[in-house]
Image 1 (cartoon, each protein chain N blue to C red):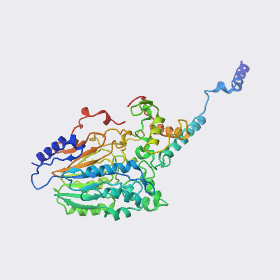
Image 2 (tube, one colour):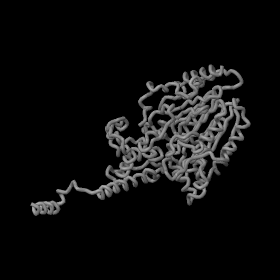
Image 3 (tube, chains in turn red, orange):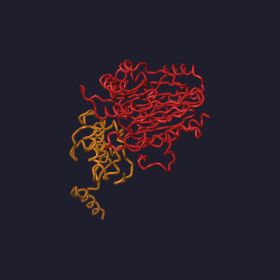
Image 4 (cartoon, one colour):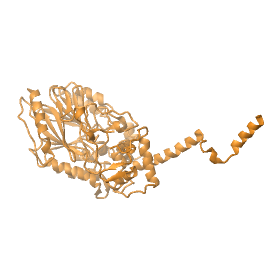
Length: 357
Length: 132
């Protein structure tokens, strides 16, 4: 029964693909069976609001967040809540967090936020926490247990003893390809909290975990990486239905490791190349991933966007709202036991712009 | 005979430098590579600097390690420019638009540094001019 509902829901999601990017947005919701209710939430991430000076901010990044908020607010029926996936600011400044926070304050419904490294490394999350509360927490919604982690921590030596100023620490971590950065980690303290939190949850309860960095190891050189990913995965694997949604990578990625399905989300600010296109590194992209279209820089919002996340029978379907491209839908296929693109998964039907080099 | 050989060797050593154009040592090669590397290093500094344009945005924000710049495909047709363009023209497009800055002359030392850095990060990739 669960399988049938999920598949029908996925088909329904695909059927609306052509209309979703045209506002106003209508969503198809299916009746649910059993004890679990299907629902949707919106996911906006990586806005990188960047102060130039004073009250002047980089227009391009502002426009991305404004557009995502405006579109997310026009969905009917309304989503159950809104997630922001981290990197609201570019250099962690109060001005940037305030300016971005003001834009985010217009979202309809309850907002949950994830900490990104660009929000954190100036004041170690102090001002962000004043605005958005705890850096890791959990909540329950319609039978699903949600966990938010701060996955962008690193060693005490790097954080507290390496840099002469907080500003330099922030700048060093802000450079994606900067060899002076440091691998992200969830850390012992938070993993102990996670274990304790999950001990209270039945193993057949669907889990959705939000992190900023991937809770899997993709490419260390760009910190598409969490150093203790395996230890976090170990805590999640006993659950039958686990979904991890992460930001940071500014691109479509998806993967399956054991019971854990992974989905990455788009940025509203700018896209990033896939790490395997960097000629000097042997990087890996999850083999399941059908890449997003290559970005056309002449269209300022190309290869950026936001997501509708449908939760059907505890499984995630990510519907990527891509501003200058057609929507992409990546959902868990219960028959195959992994996430697949609803249209382009087979290699022979992929489009030329999905070839990156 | 022996005297003749010595004369030849001496003669070779005394001819004008022009005839020695193909003669260089590993010291020369190292120096020339060093010159290139120092310009590419300057390019990397500019690439990660927020001071190239006017809004603080750095090239590296969108192009970590100069990825997704495809120097091996230039010159190539850029439909938005409506012509076959060179790499420096795309670098200038980025400086003018996302960085909100002023275009550099093609032979500006900063432009040379950008091009050197971009090519260094793409070392080993086969030339494929015109590829989209």
